[in-house]
Length: 375
Image 1 (cartoon, one colour):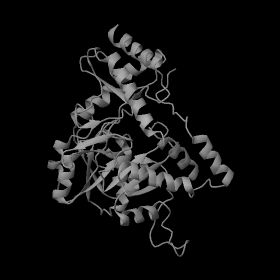
Image 2 (cartoon, helix red, strand yellow):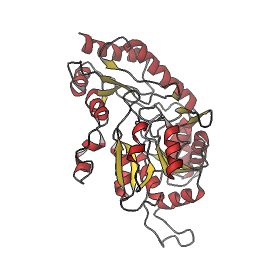
Image 3 (cartoon, helix red, strand yellow):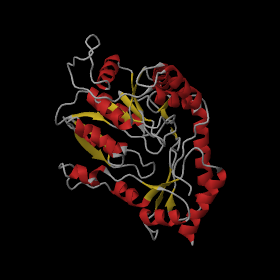
Image 4 (spheres, helix red, strand yellow):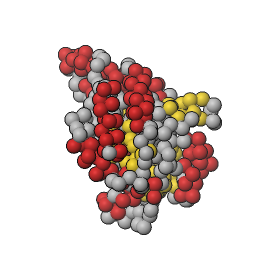
């Protein structure tokens, strides 16, 4: 079986983790946390990095730090992971949805303006499967309406967006009032579980550090003026992340090479949509997705079963937030329809995309796709 993902730990990971064990710095303090936080923030063009336990908690920290009040609204794409909506609901705010772009599968920025109300406080763009959101229109809306940007860059380590506003390429994670990353096992950089929040605002950074650490008072450790959470990352995990951060450009080159190989082998198959890359984007192809057209005789579940029978593991695309039972039970999104999200959720999946995947395995996967769809 060719797995969807397998991490590549081929650098200084073992040396750094061994150092943590030998020195006893295995918990939530140590030189690797400090180096990982400052290094990743600098790489993404931000001043402050706050390491946390995973990408979901990173989103919770970011939303919490904005101090939203009950009924305040945050605009986000329906096509994303539930962590995004969860962070909003958990902080007593209201998620407001837009559909995704049919080409890039990221947030349809043309729909955001019409969803802004007097209660809107933030926009949450989500870079999908390694491709950036078109950020300039959102940044302009944020300025015009005095909104915060909660940037979800969990799937876009090292991806870049060319801003007309600045006339330059900027890395994902550099655009948010608060920007969030995941370092889950399938990400370009992994700490097993883990995440980070980036910001340029020192007050927000201070608030984030307190919230991830139970809001201990600096001068009275076990006295709490506010309620926080234990969202800390360990030094062991940061050691893993730092070792991969040293190889991030190599990792990105490998991801782009894999995508080029898949595209070369699959581009002539009818009735499938392959990942796009807009001229203003440099995708890192976190996962190589494809969408079956309406003319195809099967949906993504049937397609996945056929590939699995040939030794190829896959994963389906996200289910839209407006179709999530847990959110509908809470009275959210009643009667709302997002046709692009609904179509790709039913017809999309992603192929094996891990960093240890070989060119030979890519050819095997592509051959299986062709056999299933063209036979």
